[in-house]
Image (cartoon, rainbow, N blue to C red; front, side):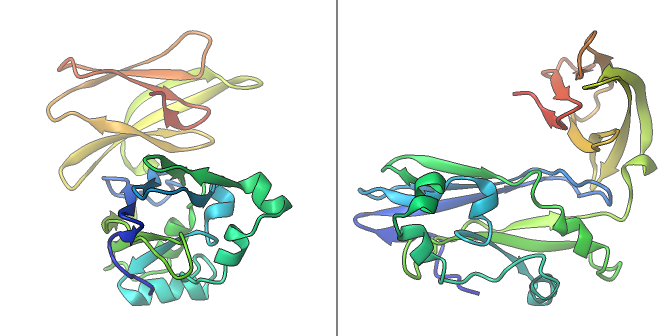
Length: 249
């Protein structure tokens, strides 16, 4: 793979890339998970970035998985594409496409791509791997010039063969969906010593990590699709949008 270095040095500064992935194990039916890539411009001139996440993937931003046999499998099955340089001409050329999809990232600015909804292929190929394989390493590369590849930190992604509903049922309730009243079940899983809560509805998702030794309590805010989770140790509460499957900041 085209791992040139951890940073890309240019014009007296550097472009850096940060990869954020989910800390806990990815469950078998967990198709929305925390994965974000941030590119920061530390140079003294603007760089071009593909703004929308769907267009950036496999055009300017590429993921690399290790060991290499896992990466080869994903490329062969068209789940990922190997990093390549032939997209830079498209990114750097001014035309009707770039006017709509390219932004100038000024010196000192950061642009973040959120892949939480766009990366279910991780789980798809995980099911095809031998049961003894339960993790892999992963990093991101961003194309910012002709064969210029700032490379992110490497994170370990871990996954489980368990489904969300294999966990301990902690809460059952209803919420106001877009058209009707919907059901929600909340399950707890303990993985590698950490406790996590998951919603199980039409769009299952990870809610939050449970503080060590704490007991969670649950309440659906009246007439809404917001689940509020509080903890016995007075840790900050979590408000979770059930319909969207994500925590409210």
